[in-house]
Amino acid sequence: MENLYLFILLALLAEILGTVGGFGSSLFFVPIASYFLDFHSVLGITALFHVSSNITKIAFFRKGFDKKLLLTIGVPAVVFVIVGAFISKYIDSKILEMALAGFLIVTSLFFLFFKNFSIKPTVSNSSLGGTLSGLIAGLLGTGGAIRGMTLAAYNLKMEVFIATSAIIDLAIDSSRSFVYTYNGYVHKHDLYLIPILLVVSIIGTYIGKKILERISEEQFKSIVLILIFITGIVTLSKVIWN
Image (cartoon, rainbow, N blue to C red; front, side, top):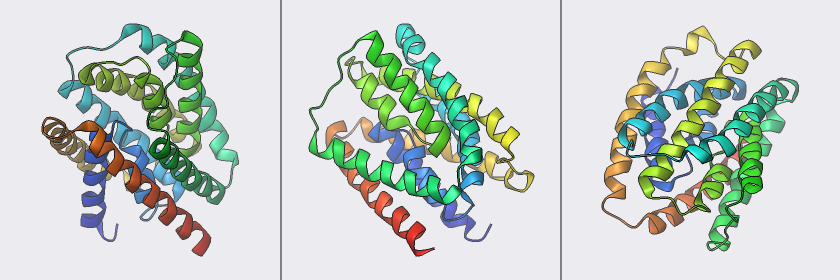
């Protein structure tokens, strides 16, 4: 890959921001990686990268997780990420990139303008949140924002929030990795990136954890949302320009 060092640096930044912002690194990594790889390859690499990333988060934030939420959010998320991953094969990659750009822009604006928006902590809302986050993750490579919004309804402690989200995400990414491999998104010539991204996930999560210990999570989230908005605009511009 040309500009490999730039790719690694941006992947590290995505991991740090994803850890601190609570949305997951894929919200940044997918649009960043699409500048270096074709979009279907990005989906495959992102899923494999996230497996290691979430294992790292579980190790760093292992003080607890919510078993009930693992079932009510995690089960529908896994089912529908498989559905979304299969459907992605039949949709033009340019349409998927435009949908990703739109998702990033709308999500960031929504959270910026409706900071106090909350979801009622009911089983039906949890299941709906899991369904939507799984489906979008399968189609676009990232659904962490919806899952984060759903988990936020339960006012979990930071460690429990991140650990629960990471376990659900691990199940999602493991499931879609098999589908993406079946779809032909995972290429042998890209596999050298996996050990590199494993190291990136460990370093990025560690740095993110240290940042969370020093600054307000809410303040940093606003910065993250602005960056997500900019990323969405740049991604949309790239698709239109191409």
